[in-house]
Image 1 (cartoon, rainbow, N blue to C red):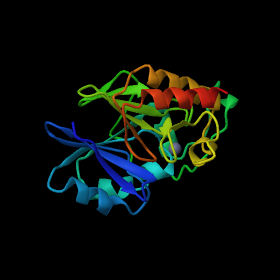
Image 2 (cartoon, rainbow, N blue to C red):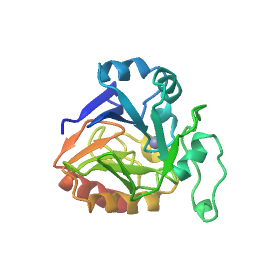
Image 3 (tube, helix red, strand yellow):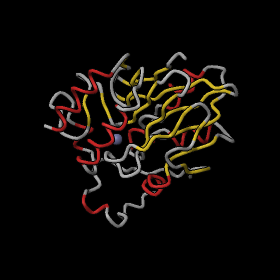
Image 4 (cartoon, rainbow, N blue to C red):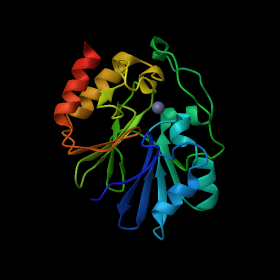
Length: 220
Ligand SMILES: [Zn+2]
């Protein structure tokens, strides 16, 4: 499947995934990016918006898009749905970390929440907590493209959020719990993705070795 990446300055991404009935949009970038996203979709209908997590640079244009796309499905994990609604209370056990990064919230409510193991069209929902408590990745079962949210970034090279990466420190600094982020990075690596499509940075083909190196750095 062709990967359609929409980017702002190469640093903040959303993706359009082709399905039989139209498009799935993965994440919505910053505020004021709706026009850019709709332009990339062109005449193909965006049927659903699937969010990897609730940080402001992933949900920023959700309200504007929901307004322009009546009937669009809006999907996020049950856990991060609370963050999307600006409920920043921690669940029992989550006090081991601290919520970091911007939770701007959205007026738009999910039409449905999902859990790991569910399917959204061709995308398998994979748990990827750590960066946020309820972050997920989406694995395209057709070609093993992994839309990994902020579990990995590729600005300045492939990195996890388990440890601050000097060339692009922001994702790790916005991470709730670093050891959990490392576990998720390992779990995603074990999926043997053919292509890594991150929230920040370029798409990386055959990312296995780079993911291994990133995990090793994150664990050091
Ligand atoms: Zn994030």
